[in-house]
Amino acid sequence: MITHIVFFRLKDQSAANLAATKEKLLSMNGKVPQLRHLEVGIDVIRSERSYDLALVTRFDSLEDLQAYQVHPYHEGEILPYMKSVTAASAAVDYAG
Image (cartoon, rainbow, N blue to C red; front, side, top):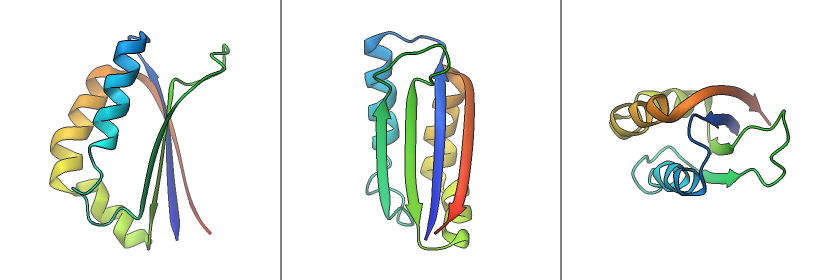
């Protein structure tokens, strides 16, 4: 199992934009067959070091993660949207 976690800091941190971005990420559910788990959370602490959103996804293999990265919905819908609303991001991918 491969877990892919991405943290996003948004340009516009309004409640409406956080909710819209969460829904956009969740829209991958059912559209990307390699996804075994999809979870999106909005930060509740709001500290100086916090990111605004966390995306947690899981895949059966590294190959499935790589296929997700280039899947037409992820590459054509999600990435352009996230690039337009994100000020910073950080990712971790691990097996386990």
